[in-house]
Amino acid sequence: MGNLTESTALTIAETCLTKFTEAKIPEFLKESEFITVRITKIPRGIEMYEEKLTDENNTNSAVVLQIQLGPETPEDECLIYLIENFIEEPFFDILRTKEQLGYIVSSYSQKLRGIFNFMFLIQSSTHPPSHLFTRINAFLITTYEDLKNLNEKQFLKLKKSTKESTMKKDLSLQEEFHRFKYEIDSAALNFLRKKKLKETLVGINKEMVVEFFRKKFVEDMRVLKISLISKNFVEVDKETKGQQKLYGGLGEFRRAHGLWKQVNVRRIYKK
Image (cartoon, rainbow, N blue to C red):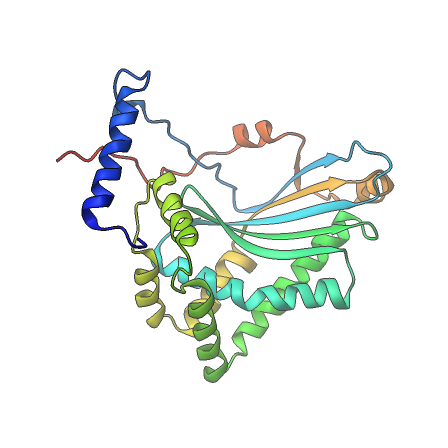
């Protein structure tokens, strides 16, 4: 890291440990005292959670369509990054530029405690949440067909750009710090993650991406539709809920569903 020598790095680490020991903490936590943080499992199908905007003068509504993809593996992580790269530009271009659904339109992957999610976000003052969700779903169906129609040259170009954008070398100590910090905070401790992903990416083919997208984004989805509704769209959306389960609070949603198993378990490593 930078110009630090091995001996200097070890000295800094020992100094930090000494400071922790001298603090008003009698001893380090035992393994049994570590707090276990587990992620709520979104069931297969479609669930809904909504809140009404309290600011009556604000005409913006916002929606997030969250697709839960499950526990991380090197192969799935590569597939998700390929899909994220493939989706990002057309999602913005079609829903923001062409359809003009809202001012903020974005798509991105998210990983919490080792569980991958894919998020589609739209903020709009001109269309109700129900319409925004409909257009996101239509985009996913179109994207599935686009993936199936990729030729070999186009797919290799996608792999190359994904490797360059997602798995590139750290450009600064700050980037390296945040990458390592995530590995420590999540207890994954996979400090060679980028190297492993590059190796795994080599064996990924188009059929694997198409099948993953079909299962996770089209047919067997775990979906939570989250909406913040402005006053001018409350009545419009009343008739569009259908038979989908609607939750009025996150606590209610968590109690109704199980939790994923802990993906990364924190351990104490002794010399």
